Length: 208
Image 1 (cartoon, rainbow, N blue to C red):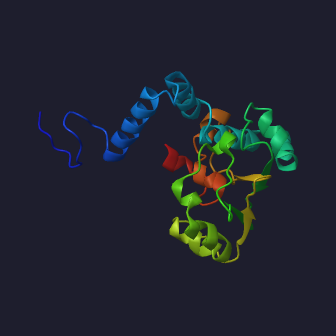
Image 2 (cartoon, one colour):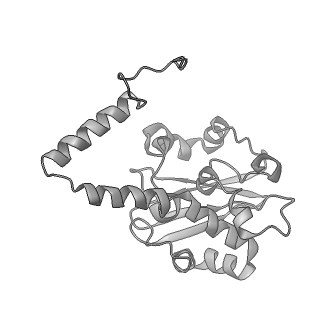
């Protein structure tokens, strides 16, 4: 079979160099007894299936579909999110902020990388990077433009600084043309970035 892809890897392996290093480190730690392989499997399975932005997407889809739930989410996000089973480490104290035609919300953690793991999973690399953390406060409109999001000049931008005590989730505006959609279908329009505020919810045409 032709070997037509252009990345380098060890003979017989499809893993990237970084993945190979991680695998070698894991093998060494297991061999020395520092890591329990079963505990590692549980941890990986948890982040693959139980924790991540799909949880947040379900929260947003519920809020779009149920006005009472939306009101609860905006009043007491911690309780509203916990009612769907999404709670735990880094998600104990949540605040939801709603995008409107007049106001767009952006979340950052200027001191480190506080992030709601229970609904968004682990933070992306750029969220932890100093340039994002500093510039999101100083020039939020410019930062959003670099993410490909150019807002109207008369749209106000509110920047929310997460802390160890409070984590934020953005409630993006529901896309037009989604009337009658189920929560499951709506959740497919919600991206991680739209819940941080560096993006918008997908339009039905893009999602399909």
